[in-house]
Length: 205
Image 1 (cartoon, helix red, strand yellow):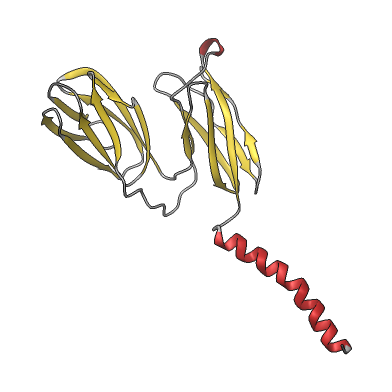
Image 2 (cartoon, rainbow, N blue to C red; image 1 turned 180 degrees about the vertical axis):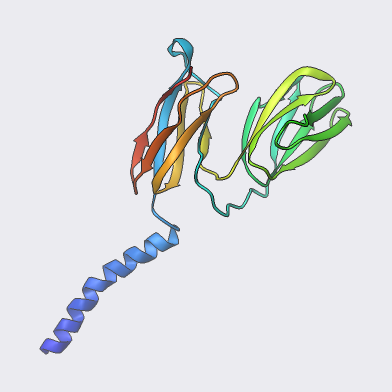
């Protein structure tokens, strides 16, 4: 092998791994990491059903084709809090024995009224505006749920022990927020690095 061919061969061998690495990153869209943690409330008790989300990350995220679901059963909304990506349609299914009227008041970011409908029926609403949408029943004012409309899909709801995990977050520095119906926690700045999982805990006040 002459010197020119040898040099070309060496350069080619060195470039191929870089090219493969570039292809791998491009296939995934971009580098990502994970965020996990635990949230406790008053008296260091577990804080289940608490929303954790990245606030300042926007983009063209397609909402799911499948509708999200809120059940009306035993005179309750289930779940009592539902985070969704903007553009998602929610089915409000009357699985109760009586009639219900589902609506959100005028001061809501998305006011609506689905009217009154009987058991076994469902009515739907698509949420396009980011924000908190309180939902109640005109006929049963004690029934309440919250639709939390978010601008990106990087969010999670804590489990029974207050644990959460948000996977495949694009690398970068963000504001990580917590939402709870009754309690509050300070927003934290987080930096997500490629291939790493960071732990961010909160205590509600």
